[in-house]
Length: 261
Image 1 (spheres, rainbow, N blue to C red):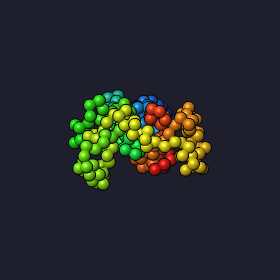
Image 2: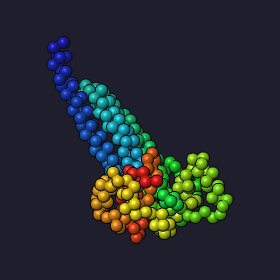
Image 3: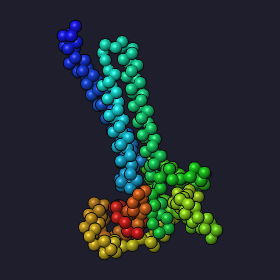
Image 4: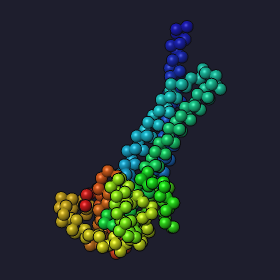
């Protein structure tokens, strides 16, 4: 009867909106856990800006979080047999988990794995940059593709002119020196060279007078002063940054999006 159908409509849509809202809440909780993994482990500050992980993750998760509840809104109907409704909701959940899994895989493949001192500057290396065929040449004591966040590394000196020429030719073809496990060494071995290349922060402020207040702000937030800090340029995925280091130990203390090459 038309009147019966009309009276059932509020309850019909109310059930759907309740189920969709419950699904949305669950999706947000799962997304929050995924965000914790991505931003606290794989892309810690400042890599979320340097490597672009934030935009990629938010796009994938936003689609995933919206997708599931919308499908639930479309398929949920208490008048369906219980078995059929449970099957439909299970399929929706599996689709959503598959989409989230793909999103996390894409973010993991693009994650930063090392910040490497490349003779006169730093370069951020991502998992996708490292040739699989060179992984076996990773030096002892270095984890090639860490899942617990990026580490600091340096590059060893070239063995001879031929190795230097071969590496230069490979770099011209797109394989950066920092992406080669066969050239990696521990950061501690590179510290003397880092300190030779590093420049006083006072020089940086003199070069970029307009950015001097921002430089001071970054150092203050890190509990540093220009007197006990030096800087080295850094190449990120799509932009150039400046890395601030302790003037004695060469340990990284801060970074900012400033092209100091």
